[in-house]
Image (cartoon, rainbow, N blue to C red):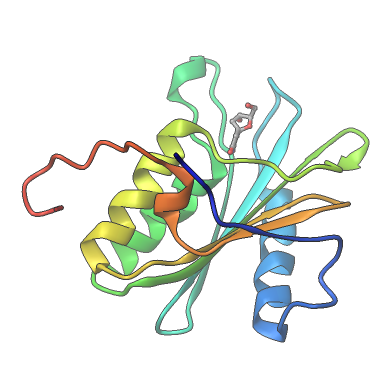
Length: 157
Ligand code: THU
């Protein structure tokens, strides 16, 4: 049997200040979204173990598949600027024309694969906050988000 461990909150009151700050950074990152095709703004914030926070937003393109999700924009930037610094947490949030989505946004499969590989190379689980206006889901290990994952790359197991 497969079970997924996660915690749900209705708002940020029970969260610590650094968690609230990370979520706030993800919300602010939505302002940088380039999403003229979907009109769906996504913001992500990655907190590294050295305290740095890297944000990203979805960047679309007229050649649709060339666009990139907010999570990977932030993760790849973090990976290139701080190659050996483990990730502590990642927050993601999205909005449409009505504002922040009521239910949390859940990262796409490709982003989960990237999230997992960065966790595997630092050998340290990190926490994901999927943020909605009425619900926040907290998952304390990327593996929980991607069961039966592809990890068959040399050095990753
Ligand atoms: N998107 C993200 O940035 N993150 C996700 O987790 C899901 C989807 C983006 C891709 C595209 O720019 C828009 O949201 C609509 O799918």
